[in-house]
Length: 235
Image (cartoon, rainbow, N blue to C red; front, side):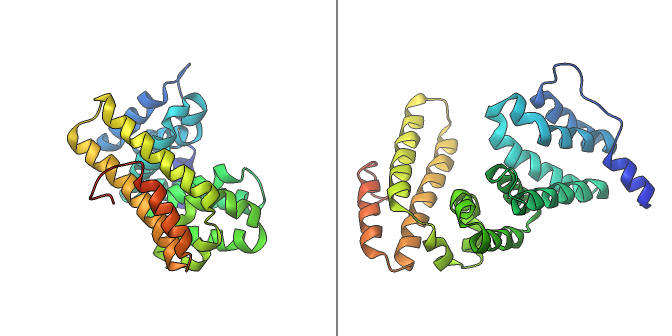
């Protein structure tokens, strides 16, 4: 693609209708991508990323997982989409470093890096914050943890583990997971996946305490969490 065509694709002509429904527009983006209407698809993915949560807060999970993953995959067949998602990520990195938007911008960075399989960038940005903005590093640590573990930065993780916050959060999360079981809204397979998320979260936290030599904290945390769910496999 020429530079002119790439730039044109980054500013396509599509515009949202009055009172747009973010979920409808995301479905349209998927349909446009499948049908080869690439410029419209890109415009809709970008619009969804920039506006979905503002209009419907419940879409934060979809925005930061499914939507950016689809946008990233779309970039493999339509180069301007890849250019745009990386530009979006890079702008968020600059915002974090400039002290603007803070956690919100960091979440954008982590979500896009995960979708692009470029989590080294999340690790690098967290190192920057650890050295220059430890207050913000503490605030965003939970979003960076998986990228830090991938780099085996266990000591750095340990620096930001506060059991006064972490243990109550984990016990509350297990309570929430058990409440989901009672609703009857999920299939058995979905419940298995929900359980796996909570188990991984709890086990990872305790393991990070242990690997940092904080045995008493690890035992205290494990004991508190085990009390919440009487399940041998979990224990």
